[in-house]
Structure formats: structure tokens, C-alpha cells
Amino acid sequence: MFRLTPVAMLVSGCVASAAFAQEFPLLLQADGQTETIYAPPLPPTEDEGLNEGGVHLALQVAYMTDYVYRGVDRSDVGGYEDAPNLQVDAKLSFDLGKLPHPFVGVFANVYDSDPISNFQEIRPYFGADWNLRPFLFSFGNITYIYPDRDEFNTGEAFLKITFDDSFLFSTERPILSPYVLGAYDYDVNNGYYVEAGLTHDMIIEDTGMMLTFLGSIGYVRGIERQFVFFSEEDDGLQYWEVGMIGTYSLNTLMNVSRRYGEWSMKGFLFYTNRIDDELPADTQLWGGIALGFKY
Image (cartoon, rainbow, N blue to C red; front, side, top):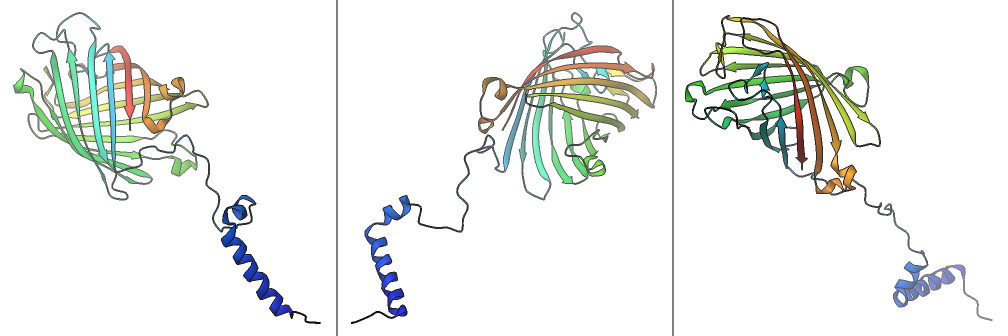
């Protein structure tokens, strides 16, 4: 009787399996007999499709009861108290990986009650953000343009350093994010503005809500005028300010994926207090609402 040796049987079996695979390839796949070293694809997540490219856009449109900037109420030039200010802030940033991330933007304040110009201020700016954890550096240039008030137009170079204290406390998110901002007015004033502050974000899980608490204090030296308001003193602590920003995700409200951009509604409430009567600043409660978009 003719018998196959074990080697011949193994070769014969391999040939038969190969022939069957060529004859019925789909059947093997359907029976799950194919193997792979790769993990099966995961189902799509909520964040899949977010803008992970090199260009990002941030846009905010706000209605504010007052336009208070660095302690000075710039809407205090006419009209009735708490006349609304329409504010638009658009920013385009570029992600260059480990290199500084350049940005360019423009802010505009429209105040219908201004007796000189409804477009009260146009503020183009550019610069870069550089994350060297635990420090975040932001630096650049701001130009202040006041239509029909050309004598007040000016420009400044600025540097802001924020400390990521999650590095210190070993937490998932920063706790207070202390920062220092320094600006040099190289045009009209040839003076300095210095601001120090804290910021804390409180995220209310599973609600789409976030509360941001802020506090800051400002110091000026050699700046004789801010907008149309003049100083009687050369330097000193100008103001302190506390505030809260409530942010609600409209993506959560409307059940819209963030791959189409991040939409939000914001509410602002601030209290500004003047420190030195010889320096331009105001003491008042103010706030507003805004619609924001990021992509």
C-alpha cells in the first residue's frame, strides 16, 4: 500500500489550502480565518475630523455695556450710560509645530453713541505664541487706530508670559495660570504698561458649561494719554479688576459635532476699580454677551 510521508502530507495540505484560498477568497474572510497584526479600525469619535491642520480661525462678536480697556472706559465720551458697544475680534493663527505659532488679527469697537466716529477703534495686531512648557510666551505688535481722532493713534510692542502651574501641581489642567504682560508704547507716549493677573477655568462636566474667573492689576509709567483721556501723574498703579466669563457650548446644545467648528455663547461680568485718582481709570460694573466660533 502506498503511504504519504509526514513531509509529503504537509506539502500536500499547504498546496490544497492555497488552491482553496484562490478559489474561495471571500469565504475565508467571511469565516474570520484571515489573521492580521494590525488592530481593527476604531469607530469614529466626536473629535474626529477636527481642524488639525496648520491654520486656525477664531472669531468673536460681542455686545458690551461698556468698552473698558486696561481700566479705562472708552465709551465714556458721550451718549447715555451703558449704551451698547458692538465688538468684533477675528484672529488667524498658524501651527508650526515646535516653532513659535504666528498669528494675525484685528479688533474693532463700534459705538453708535460716540459723537465723533461710530467706528471708535480699529486695532490690528500680529505676533506669535510659543509654548515652552511650563511657560507660554506671546509677543507681537498692536496698532491703535481711532478714526477721525488721528492725533491719538499709536502703536506698541508687547510680551506676555503665562506660567502653566499644572506642571507645578501635577494636575490635568492649570489652576491659576498666573501671567505678566508688558507693553511699550513706542509712538505717541514712549511709555510702559505692565499688567499681572490670574485666570482659573472651572469646567462643569457633561453640561457644556465652563466658568472662567479672572483678576488683574495694571501699572503705567510714562503714558500720558490713553485714548482721549490724559494723565496728571507720570506713573503708578492704575486699576484692579475682577471678572467672570461663562461659556456654553452650542455644539452640546444643538448636538453638533465639533468637526464643524466649535460654537459657543459667552456671558461677561466685570468689576473695575480705579486706584490712583491722578491716572485715567474708572470704577464700574460692566459686562455683555458674545457669540464665538473656532476652527
